[in-house]
Length: 474
Image 1 (cartoon, rainbow, N blue to C red):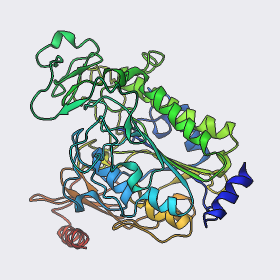
Image 2: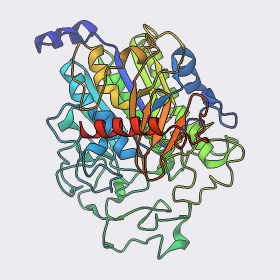
Image 3: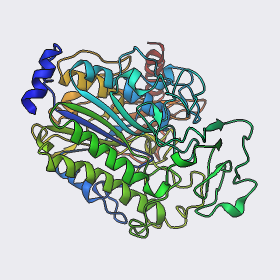
């Protein structure tokens, strides 16, 4: 089979890509302190700990933004999302914000000869306008470089609560068409606002009071598609199975898999086998379920003999959030668990906890195990993985940090723009949060950002403010 695969590539005018298989696992809302390999004691993450032990654990690894959609946009395009209007957190019926025809991480790797697949949370919009969920959905992932996809269109708390597989809603009954609205209510299905007695799984704490699906109120209104609706507690199993199936289907050629888990985003509804297994409630149980999904991927690589020549990168789309709209006990059951570890802030925040996240890289054939303090970011995946395959595409803001990602250099980025409520700037270990009352921190001895040095170092504030403006104008 391996010989046949190589022959097919040669017949298409392509050679076997020089780089390894590449799997990017992007978790959702997982903070710097949420994994045991980053110091957590209440939760146990043995599979992620294995990645850390057998690969590189980064202490200064970042998502490009403190929320999900802009991070995913930047990861796939190599361009900071703040450069493009309309890249904030999207509704579930948004048009696709990554335009077909541009260089993307999957399209660049596809040019290099890789099979390309996406499994899990999308949240980048679909089609050119409002999607019609009852016909072929395009443009979508295929139009920006993915050969195959199995997706949650937006998030688990937004309608439509269905999977999209290769451009079509999976298991849809044509006699029960889907309609979605993010404005006026449609259909006659109960809502969390009007029928709170039907919220049998969990109630909302803020928002999330529209159409009820599986006993949970969602954002947005939906009617139809009953046979296609997901079961929340089965979602992790379904996504892990699809990821493993993709690996199995492409085991005889180079492949790229973008596996974006839903865990640990709300609504947190872990399968019953994970319920009560952590020391910090439903949110901790969801972390255990996330670890299971990572373990399923690692087991598949071991079983198929692919582990040695596969680069696996794990990270999160932003920092942690506790109460994000549902009464799931996350605040009450947190105990002394610190989701952001020693950092200040979390999801939505300008502080380091908004974008400094777990960041692991394993490639047994090349990466030596250890810890790295290099400043690295997901916006550089396109440039770095292109370089790994002898290509030169970078995206508008991506940099080749391959040597740092592989542990061959202790130096990563010199500067990084962090997007949250505002745009902050990292310059080495300096951090500037600009504004009328700017905040300046020296993270080398103040990781928790507790000592604002702006008043005593006005020249550094001025220097970094000018540099940020220069980057913005580029």
